[in-house]
Length: 397
Ligand SMILES: Cc1ncc(COP(=O)(O)O)c(C=O)c1O
Image (cartoon, rainbow, N blue to C red; front, side):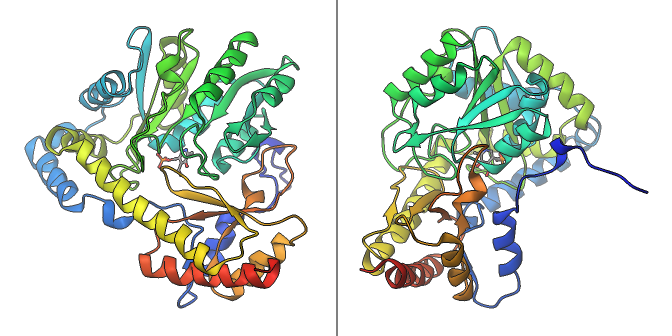
């Protein structure tokens, strides 16, 4: 049979994240800074085990049946209350939808909102699934230039003038892949542009509460006077990624439409995992759990940056994230980044080429994403000594 996949279902170029994973698998001693997994030691394993026990034994038939389409009502309410009371988001005119991680939302949002050829504005370098999910809908992921504060408003405005834009996709806190947090005044400027060109904002914030400092920059959703922000969050990083529980919070009409699309994709969310998360929120000190995650991540982030400072070239630049899971390493112009990646692989260290995160119209660039959460501290030190020494060989002291 001859079958040709439609263009929208084809991914552009190779998958550099998977490449690191696949080539590193099975190599003894391989250290991967490529894998974007949370730190295993920050998962509240015992509490989750207890929650499963309790849920499976208390009312088994209820959780072994189909659950409500919009997600478990108690989890939805606990989540909604936190968004309103702790994250200061509006309550009026909003709906909540529990999803299979914030990852599912990346597909649901463009699928519900976009028509063929619509433009979606996003950071020049952003989360791969955020880019590809837009492509999968026949829409166009337009990369917007960034600086050290994130998306540049003037560049966004220039693109928005096409009149083809539907929404702006942003990861304003501890961005994946760069680790950048967008300051408040930049958020205001971007919101104003969304207003002028009547664009929605899709605020993807799975790392938002995992802060290394006390500084809290208000979310777009908390400043959303026009009700144009769709906010996505997740329990993957604060509780467990394997449970696959996230959520969307935003304008009633849009969330309602997304709900209908979701129903046609996967029906109901599994009830068991939702109840486990709800049980944890009811029984543990969730703020303390988030602080614990942040402590573990910060220690590893510091270790990664400090080790590089000691052993690496001063010509290489790093972002200094104030939360989240990633740092962005930029090599001087002229360095062959494909060759540098291969050299790191030969030395059994995996890093992800920045090209993996480039939206349409954006060059491969001179950067790499390094994730500091999953490897052990020993691996971080050993791996960064290797990466550091290799940068000195390539770029000089
Ligand atoms: C920016 C961003 N959005 C969404 C996700 C998906 O997270 P979840 O585990 O909640 O599906 C990730 C995970 O790596 C991410 O980095």
